[in-house]
Length: 179
Image 1: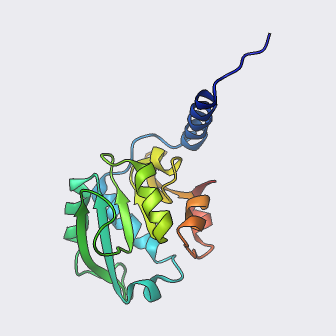
Image 2: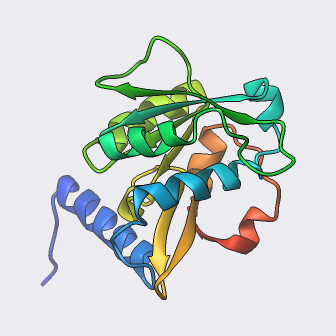
C-alpha cells in the first residue's frame, strides 16, 4: 500500500524538513536585536562590493521589527568598523514594500513575512538579513542565530546568488550555510 500526498502536502513536508535540517544545532531563537545589528554590520564588511554599492553610507530598511529600527538607529552615523570608510546613513521602517528609496539591506523582523520580503529583495538585488534563524530556511540570505550559547552566522547560499552578493570567501569559515 502506498501513501500519496497532495502537492501542497509534499511542499509543506519539504519546507518542514528544510527547517529541521537548518535548525540542527542552531536554536530557533535569534540573537537579541541590539547584538544582531552590530554583528550584521560587521559581516557586511565581507561584501566585496560594499563601498561601490553604498558610496560610503549604508541605508537600512526594516520591516516587522520596531526594536530593530531602534537598534540600527543607535548606530546611525557611526563607522561599521574601525578603519572602515562605510557608516550607517539612514534607517527606515517599512509598513509595506516596495519602499520609495532602495536600501542597502532589509532587516526582516519576526513580524514580517519572509517570503514576501525576499520576493522584493531578490527582484531588486538587495541583501535580506534577520535575527530569526527559521527565516534563513525560508529564503532570507543572512541570519544570526544561537549555537552553544554563542551567536552563529547563518548564510543562505541560494539567497546570496539571487540577491547578487559577492562575499569574501572568509564568510564561509564563520557561517553555517544553507542552500
